[in-house]
Picture 1 (spheres, rainbow, N blue to C red):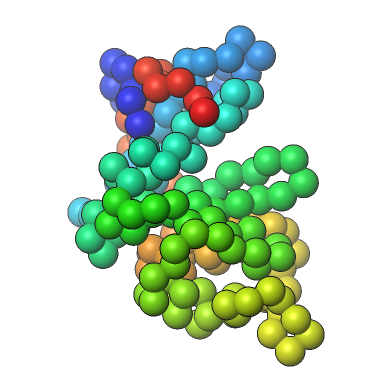
Picture 2 (spheres, one colour; picture 1 turned 90 degrees about the vertical axis):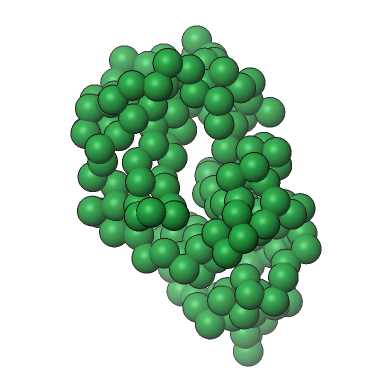
Length: 169
């Protein structure tokens, strides 16, 4: 994602992000930690000018066969999840309404069905899972797409990161 001067960050990300003033704009602080040998988690701080992790070229460059790159983010009034498989075109889902767009392949479509997200618009017969918060829906979608069940241990660090050299969209 274009981080400059990558260095260790505090294990408590709140400390790493403390004092950052999003009104000052880019560069954005990026923090990353491995989940396992194939997966990692990246946290992006400010989004006053957009989320760097939503760039289609960023997601497509991070995607690998069998390992889609996936991002979840919040914009006013909704939470969205975007992903790319094998450096393909961008796919998007809004977990609350289950609205989708993009070229979904068979695997993510089936995985989403298994966790309760039908192919078409939600209906009384095929409703989306009852969620107390949209963020829970985003996590459920990301777990279905990637096959990784994130836990608190996956977010414990160690964290490395730096300021982004890539402008927000």
